[in-house]
Amino acid sequence: MEKKNLDWSNLGFGYMKTDKRYVANYTNGAWGKGELIEDDMIVMSEDAGVLQYSQSVFEGLKAYTTKDGHIVTFRPDLNAQRMVDSAKRLEMPPYPVEDFIDGVRKVVAANAAWVPPYGTGATLYIRPYMFGINPVIGVKPADDYHFRIFVTPVGPYFKGGAKPIYVKVSDFDRAAPHGTGNIKAGLNYAMSLHAIVTAHEEGFAENIYLDPATRSKVEETGGANILFIDADDHLVVPKSDSILPSITRRSLVYVAEHYLGMTVDERPVYWKEVQEGNFKECGLCGTAAVISPIGKIYDHGKDIEFASGMEDIGPFMGKLRSTLTGIQDGEIEAPEGWIDHIM
Ligand SMILES: *Cc1c(COP(=O)(O)O)cnc(C)c1O
Image 1 (tube, rainbow, N blue to C red):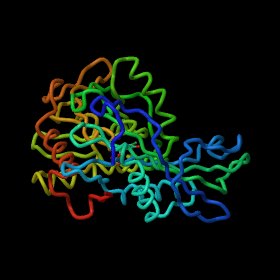
Image 2 (cartoon, helix red, strand yellow; image 1 turned 90 degrees about the vertical axis):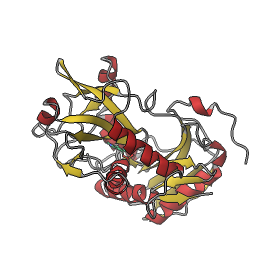
Image 3 (cartoon, protein in one colour; image 1 turned 135 degrees about the vertical axis):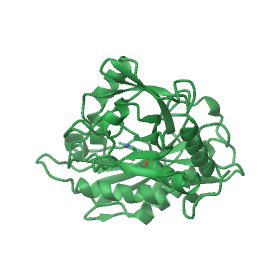
Image 4 (cartoon, rainbow, N blue to C red; image 1 turned 180 degrees about the vertical axis):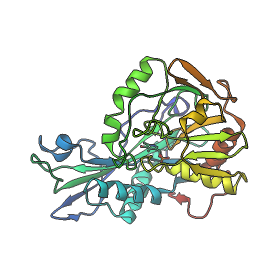
């Protein structure tokens, strides 16, 4: 198969129309059979449920070219299950896990020419999503839904890849207690946009959100979980019901314990601990960025600096990152069931 003629090593994180997408429709109370189509446009009612009341959930995962030239995805079963959980919370009919995994395989295989070659730093981003599509004007869940997966080749999420970023602690909230912070829904992102635009204007790469109820505990950023390394070299992972259960984070916890012999503490992390300098490294994690090290956090007029600094990723975050990307690239043996071999 001939690859598309793209400048793979210089791709940004943006959308590019690829050849095929996978779609399925839910009508008359049942999911229809999924299929690959070419049309990238969606025609719907001006009163579609998603346009009125934002009934929409999504996922994000990637396909990688391994060192020996195969195309694989990473733990798609966890994305499928998380989308089931997200759908249920928004009163949407879950898309079956098996069909989700099958859809991912089909759409990646159909767009194999768009999967960036090994060693370019680029990957194929896979975006499954579903939304209410029939007319809804009284407030209630839609009756009909559209499920779709498109793919687009992407470079690193943050320019500079593993270069430390400067972030701020936000005065806005991301997710209410007992709200929707633990599901992957577009609505959580809509309300984070003002905060992220403001942070960018002020020169920060991202926002760190605290728990809205007490503003004393670390939650996450708009689209990534947060990790710390403490003075005892433990990986410390904030725990809260309103944090999105990141698959990257769950995988890194496993990698820390089983590949790197580290101790992992999953517990509430107080902002005071961060302010007092109890952590020597900090990073964001998610599919898009894997790990982005945080060098400094702006906290109301003061900078909290991590020992790892603004030049390079720290030793622990570096090791975690290279081990996980090694597993994804097929350079390091993966735990059973983590890699879905597509072709
Ligand atoms: C998608 C997402 C993450 C990262 O999850 P991964 O499964 O690791 O990609 C973290 N936080 C939020 C709010 C997200 O939407």
